[in-house]
Length: 225
Image (cartoon, rainbow, N blue to C red):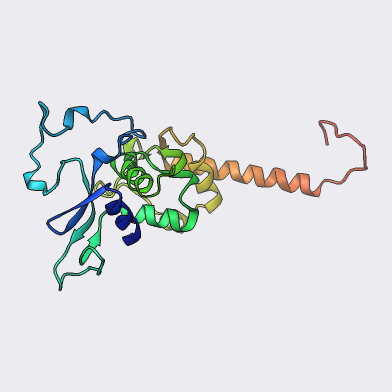
């Protein structure tokens, strides 16, 4: 993370303000290319000007790469640009590039991460390397529980362990979750999970029949077989 931030500072994609480091959105003209959001109405100095004084930033759209912390504050790490802690987005770029390279094929996540998280990942990664970050992006839809969007705040969620402890097989849970395209919302119900359990059992039985079937080379099977 420190190396990426240092590269961004060196090439002008980042700047220091009151000890913290921010990404300069105006240095990356392609910002918004993933989410297709038009930011022209939010630029400083326009008719919809945003007061940047409370942000300590050049532009209210700029995002934090490194936040200054005091000598005794935790967590905090020493860096060439001062003791602090990383912003929300920079760690993902660092991990991805460490294990997958500066450019890799596929990046996935929930649709709620498309903006600003993935948009900021692209800006800081490509701003540091000058190379395409990810070639393809997959954003999956939210999961519903009995027609209500699943969320921790609503308490309407189940963990894999919860379902397994209730006697449902891992294969049936996987089958249900893969039963709709990733961009379509799945409405999770226990009735649907039980149906998936039945389907998986039928597939197991069919596989067992085929595996145990014995026939001569070149022979054909009739409907009664």
